[in-house]
Length: 167
Image (cartoon, rainbow, N blue to C red):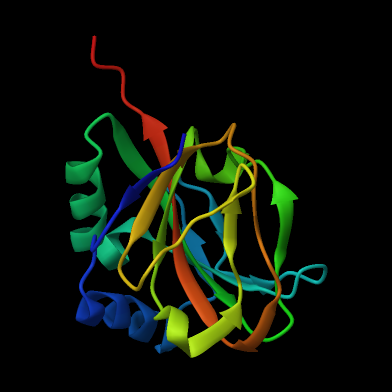
């Protein structure tokens, strides 16, 4: 079952992450397993813009996530920007070989919900009501989707996590 973390980030922290991706960034990133992959692409099917971020580029947020969810560790971070018309169909996440092992996700709402219409995050057929700075933790077995953006732009941070063996 998804778990919501209210006020995980402050408004200025959300803006700092958004501003970071507006800078001139390299075309490629190096993943935690050493693969060099393309930083950004736009989904031809669902129209969202996907930007990968190296963990060291936002290390203080990686540390914050690792501290709040000590049973897991961050393996990748990406920013997803949903302009007008963008959506994401119903799916279950899965680990990507080039990004390494992962089992769970952590979605952080970066934009204030008043700045766009549509774009509802649905998890297991339930609307996740997230304000700016709120986050939701979920396991990959949780089906989810994002409804079509009707106006404005929705920006989220999608974090991939792997479970840590505590034995």
